[in-house]
Image (cartoon, rainbow, N blue to C red):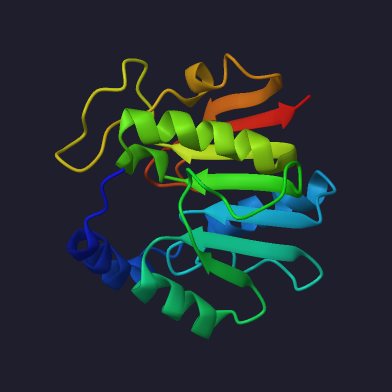
Length: 184
C-alpha cells in the first residue's frame, strides 16, 4: 500500500469543510438502531463522521495521517483515535459491533482493498457498512481514486447483504453507494 503524505495532508486541511451532519446523524442512528455499542471508522480522518456518537458508545477511529489524528483528538477527545492501516487493524477478532468506511476504499489500490475487506471481516462482530463511490466496473475516477463495487468484494465471506443502495443526495451529496453487511 502506497501512502502519499503530501496528498493526505492537503486532504486533511479540507476535511473540516466536508463535515456532513446528515451523514454523521445517519451513521450514528443506524448503529444505534442495530443495537451496537462499539464502533470503528477506518480512514476516520479528522473524525467528522464520529463526532455525533454519544459517549455511551465505545468509539474508535483509525487513520494513517498524523495531522488528521491530531485534529480528531482535539475535536473529540473521548474517542480512541489510533494511527493504523486497514490492512492491519489493532483489534481482536470479532471485537467491534459496527465497522465502517466512508469513501476510503475509493482511494486504495485493489490489493489493499482485498486485504482491508479481510481485516474488516476479522474485527467485525456484527455489522460492516461501506459508503463508497460506486460503479459496477470499478473504473478510475481520477489519478488518486476509483469507483468501487463493494458487494462484489464481500462475495467470498460469510455475510448477508442487508442493503446495497445509492445514498439519497440529502444525506450524502456525493451519492455514495450504501452497503450494509451482516456478519454471519
